[in-house]
Length: 243
Image (cartoon, rainbow, N blue to C red; front, side, top):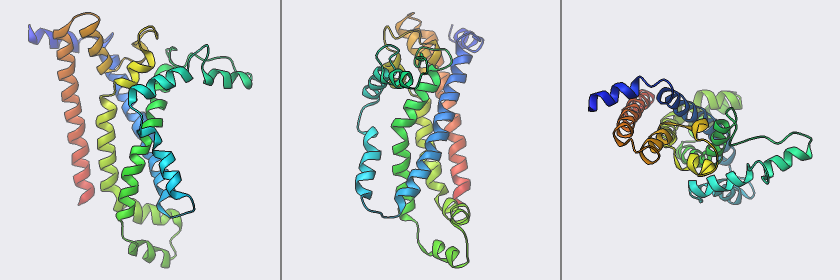
């Protein structure tokens, strides 16, 4: 019976494999933007300037709220009838959008929410790494006439790469197992979950909507193996970067 569950899940091209694709898309796209934006903001906050402490506090504010609270807040903002997002679009003559209900807009919108909340975490990690770097390589490159981009590409980034891998590792784990934001933005009565049905959402529906506990457990075991494989690959990449 257990083996049959694996056969049934792995042969499910209607729900399981699309959920795998959405999970990968959600994680990779969110991670890419979070690392790039996090690096840019961390570099801006690296050097002291007036009001730097207040800017850091403001940037880190999204981390204070729980993901469920963040999801509920953005659900109100993206509400098709009373949401601020559609009101702003109306001011510039653009028709209201089904942000969290449309088949082509729900996943990108939830990815945006994840980026908004978790980019500050990447900023925090990268800023800690930048602060720990020695100034001597930077000064030597500056004396040799290297431009700002050349110093970043050939000095800062290679030295910071182990920290970047740590940030990627942590955010990849969180991104793969994201559930609370997806559930809070859709919620009961918020429309079908199929637009944002990642593996976590799929397994939740199997357990609590259809009472398919065996199939749900099988999905989660496969999901766990996917996470272990992904983390092993990232860890191997980190070891290469440290050499």
